[in-house]
Length: 217
Image 1 (cartoon, rainbow, N blue to C red):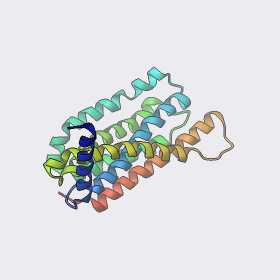
Image 2 (image 1 turned 135 degrees about the vertical axis):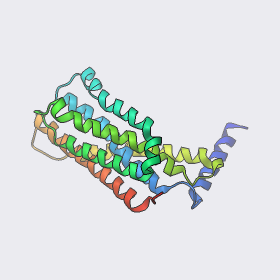
Image 3 (image 1 turned 60 degrees about the horizontal axis):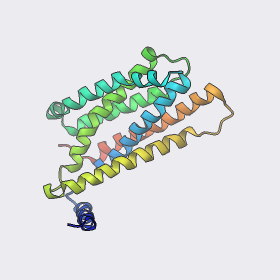
Image 4 (image 1 turned 60 degrees about the vertical axis):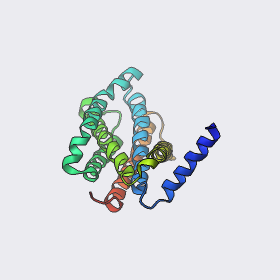
């Protein structure tokens, strides 16, 4: 089959998935956009927080994420066992609440903040939230999709993933661009506050969508 014919077939399958009322779960899709938006903004702005406000080197900033990423990994591999006990929806809600609290705590940091007293806890919360939410969101998004349409539906989910990342960073950058007479570290702290406040709102909206629109198992 020619490449353009493959593309046409794939596009038609995506159209069928979108048109099928019992296909992809659009509440999960919208939640994914909000959640990934907050998560991508978190990585973008936390790195700036570490280097511009706390004066970490690039290497120090990278290693500072390590405990959170280890927790992320450990929770992600335990997701199947956790969802068997409490279900996908509850795990997503708990994960999103962890993400929200972590983003809020990050918005309160300033130049006097230290790693162990102030930064580590929100990093761990966000890491746990990301680790717990990704699998259930994908599973709920695909649970009503016919097996022959799963590839096309996965493509739509991946597109939402990319859209969420771009949208989230854009929102948090816009939130940080407040007109102010501050300069230097004071300006960086103010930008950090507004950026993570924007991320907190994204996480709160994700919780609202899950609570209202995603049905219980």
